[in-house]
Structure formats: C-alpha cells, structure tokens
Amino acid sequence: MRRPALPSLVFTLYMNLIQALAFCFACMLVPLFSTAQSRYDVLITECLPDPAPAVGLPESSFIELQNHSAHDYNLRHWKISNGSSSATIKTDYLLKADSFLILCSVSSAAAYSLFGPSLGLSGFPSLNNESGYIILSTETGSVIHAIHYNQTWYENELKARGGWSLEMADLSSPCTGRENWTASVSAAGGTPGKKNSVAGQHPDGQAPSLLRAIAPDSLDLILLFDEPVDSLSASSLSDYQVSEGIGSPDSAMALPPLFDRVGIRLQKPMVPGKIYTVSVQQILDCSGQETSIRNGCKAGLPQKSKSGDIIFNEILFNPPPYGYDYLELFNRGPHIIHCDDLFLAGRDINGHLKDPVRLATDDLAFFPGEYLLLTENADWVLQHYPMAGADRILSLSALPSLPDDQGNVVLLNASGELLDELAYDHHWHSPLLSGESGVSLERIRSDLPTSLASNWTSAAETAGFGTPGYKNSESSADPAGTDFISVEPKVFSPDMDGYRDFCFIQYHLPAAGFIGSISIYDIYGRMVRKLVNNILWGTGGSFRWEGLDDQQNLLPKGHYIIVAELFLPDGTVKKKKLVCVLAGR
Image (cartoon, rainbow, N blue to C red; front, side, top):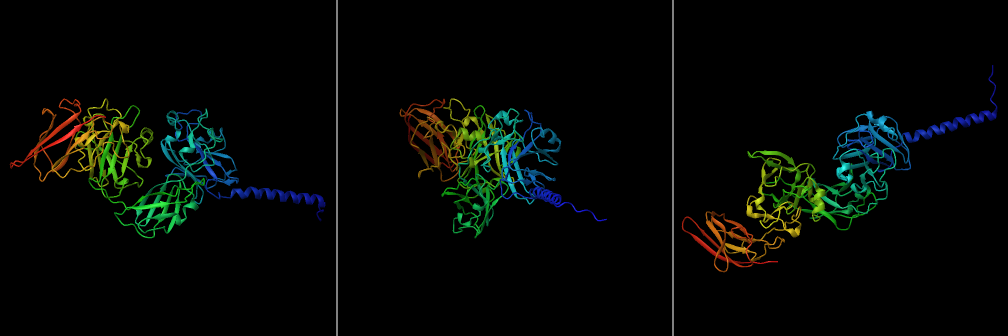
C-alpha cells in the first residue's frame, strides 16, 4: 500500500526542524575541535601551592584557568605542567569565553565543585610551596600561558605559610610576574571558579630589559630578559648586534615556556677569552612596551675556574635582628666563569668539608671584575642595601653555617679544586665599633691573601655598614711605592666614614726571609704602638694601623712617626722612618 504523502506545510516544518537541529549540532561540534589561535587566550589566573593549614578552601592544591578570549575552546589533550611532570585533560571539556575552570587532583574534584566548574586530573602535578613553574600547553605542545611563581609574590609572611592562594590582578597584563600577582584577600583564602578578589588595573609600565647572555657554545647565545617578550618582535634579526665584528645573528627565536629568553645563532664563532657586547633594540613585551635604545650586556665563552680566580670579598655573619647572612664573591681573574661550576661549603672542626652546594643550576656567567652576592633572602638585601643590583644576587636555599664569632667557608669548582677559603674572626672588626651586629667585614685589597687578618675590616657607617654586590667601602688598590716601604694615605681619619679610615704600611722586599718590626712614635719620641714585633715578612704585603695605641685607645690627632726595622740572618739590615698624620673629621 502506498504511504499517504505528508501535507506540504507539515513536511516543510519537519525539514526545517531537522536542518535547525543539524545546524545547532554543527555549532556545538566546531568549538569542540578548535584550538587556541594565540598565546594568552587562556590564562592561569590563580593557584594554591601550599593548601595547609586550610583557611576556607579544600586542603589540596588547585590551578584556575580563565578563557580570556572571545572564543570557546575544547581543552581535550591540553596539558598542565610544573616543569617536570604534567597531567593531560583526556576528555572533551568546552571552556567558554570568559569562563573559569578549576584544575585539581581527582580526589579533590568534588570538594572544589562547590566553588565552581572543576575538573579532576589523574597525575595532577604537585606545586612546590616556595617556587615553581605552572605551564599550560595545547595538544601540539604550544605554550598558551606559563608562570614561575615565588613565595615572595604573597608579600605577606603569614599568608605565605599556607592556606592562601595567589591571584592575578590584571588579565590584560598576563606576561608580567610578581608585579601582577599577590595573595588573595578573600576570607575563604582564595576565589577558585570566580573573579579574583584582587582584580584591578595593573598595566605593565616597564619596558623589557636585557639582563644577561648565556653562551652554550661558540655560535649560540641565549639572551635573558627581565620579562617575557613578543615572539614576532623577538625574531627581527636587525634588532640584535654583537660586537667584535660579528654583527646581526643568522636567526632569533623567543624560547618557551616563559618566553623571557631569546636564542640567537651567530654568523661567526666567538673566540675564547674575548668579552663581547650584545645590544638589542625595539624588542616588545606582550603589552607593547619597547626596549630602550641602549640595552645591552656582556657575553663570552666560559672557562673552567682556577684557584685564585674567584675570591671572597665581603661577609655578613652577624646580621641585624630578622636579617640574613650574605657572602660576596669577586672575580679577580681573567676568565669568564659559569656559576654552575662553583660550589660553596663549610668546614667542620676536623677540617672536613660540609655539604657543598652548587651556586646556580642556571648558566649565570661571572665576568672578570664583577661581584656576585650569595644570600638566603635577596629581597631583604635589596630592601636594606638599595645599591645592590638584583641581577648580581643569587638566592640559595641555605648558606653554610656562619657563626657570629668565627667560622670557615670554602669555595670549590666542579672538580673539587679549592678556589678560595675564608676563616673569619669577629676580632677582625674595627675596635671603634659600638656593636658588630649588622656590620659586614670587607676585604681591603683583592691582591693580598684571604687569610690575612689585616686585609679585612668593618664596612663604613656611611655605606650602611655593608656594600653587598658592589665595590667595598674600605677597598684599596694602591700599590706600594718605589721605595721598599711606604705609607698610604699619609693623612688618615679613623672615624669609620669610609674615607681614609686606616693608614696602610705597604712594602716590597728584594728577597724572602726578612724579620722585622714596626713601631709608632708620637712627636715627643714616645712609642705609642708596637704594630709588628719581630715577625717573618714576605716579599710583599701591607700592615694596617687604625690610629690606636697598645691599649686599643684612639690616639690624639697629630703627626706620628712610623719606624720599620728589618734584618736578614746574613746581617743585611733595612731601616726606614715615615711620617703620617692622624686627623679628625
């Protein structure tokens, strides 16, 4: 039997319904298979590295994503990573425009679903309490957003102890770091799944700046900037110049995951032992800020460190209350040294090395004539010593034990060779100090032995009692005079103002083996100080007089006569009288 035909109107309505359903289904399918078209479409906007003790959130870590674009994205096969391990989103999940998603462990998904859309991931990467990476990437490996958070981002010591999340403030500045992140101010300890409690405008007002260059080999340089840079801008070859005739590179590319590094391939190889200058211009960050015209750094091929190249130059072992110890190194040698070749260690009472620690896992280059500061809290140093450069400070998880009275610290290279050793004593401080707390010991001359007590003194009060990462307040590079013994300066004022606080008696002798004494007399011929008493002298060196008598009292202002008497066992005698002036302010 023939089926009766549907009335034309009913048929038309039926077909229109089928077409409409098919169109809607197709619209649903399109975003399910779309991928993000540009970096920063989807952002990491909140995280909870240390969930304990809980404030009001579940006691487990989470990472919040927000779709900051006008498109919907399917997150299937996207990955979230901490830099060493990652978890993959294995199911379809449509993250709609301007919506949130809480990523967490499978066991925490139900608890976090009370705060907003959540997705539990098998193998959810652990978040280090102190610092770490969080990297969001697509199935093809393209990095969409990445951060390298640090405990200092909290700017609140109590909240940094746990239970509070870190939140991004301004979504329009996703490539800025610490300046755009802070601790949540929500009473619950965080705002997973909704607008951040610290949301506000924090535009990026800083242009990217080139910090340093790393040389993996003679033809490649990795340029490290202080913030992520725009990939397209970073690929412009004419914006890079390398000195010594190398010129522009053959290639340039911003490197993931943070894109704060640019790898360039040189046209000609670098020569060992030569220091180059790399300059950049017109490099943009993700906010469109452009590098200044004069933006550059040194570069060169590193060499293995040798004994005497790197020396201890300053030490703060008795910091003020709530302060931190620090150690300063100085590269007095001719070589560029990679800091991952340097190790710091203590020495126990039996003379054994204790727990050597590598200074840096990153390839930080240490150039001749530069200073490098080692501390457990760089922020404290920068706050108390504004002249200290952040790019010359290495934050270590722990320094060797530095007792307040005396101690021993050792610098080694990767082969275990001893580069320098400092066995300090608090008696090296100036007796004129009212107190030693918060006062560093500074090396006076870099060419004299580290173990020489007279080559160390207290940092000047005018310098804030410390000069971490830059030239010492009491440093001296004055060589001995043409005579076998000389005085420098001839007028000095021991007032600890950092200017001519000591009288240095410098000598150079034609042979070893001299035994000698130094006596100091006032203008009436009375001996007021036996500075040196019949000791064996080297062929060159110096002694220091602080203007004190034998009872360690400060002498009156005036002229003083310095008498040096030396002899050799064969009967050779040398005698010299010198005059100096002890002055006041």
